[in-house]
Length: 111
Image 1 (cartoon, rainbow, N blue to C red):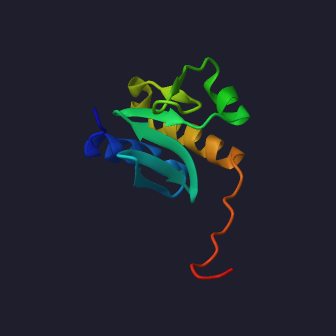
Image 2 (cartoon, rainbow, N blue to C red):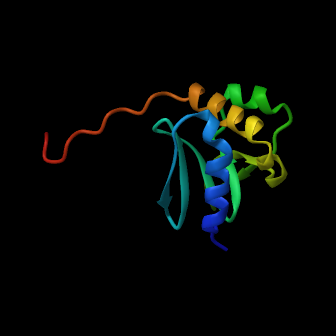
């Protein structure tokens, strides 16, 4: 089963208070970015947040699962939690803030 576009749109809308939220198709599913940092995956209509110490503290009790076969464990966020936009945006921002800034990519053709 693959993710429906309406699921992606809803999660992005509910997370908007965290910063600039974008998604990118990856391997038939979606990577989710907050302010340029990949911090979640949306796979099979489920939300998987990258595990961070701050995210774990925010969540308290966590459920971990593979986002895709063979992946490391991610925090699986129950669909019922998506309806609370303030809570979800808080989790997204907390997680993104705890991740390192991505290294700039070298321009194509440079050595």
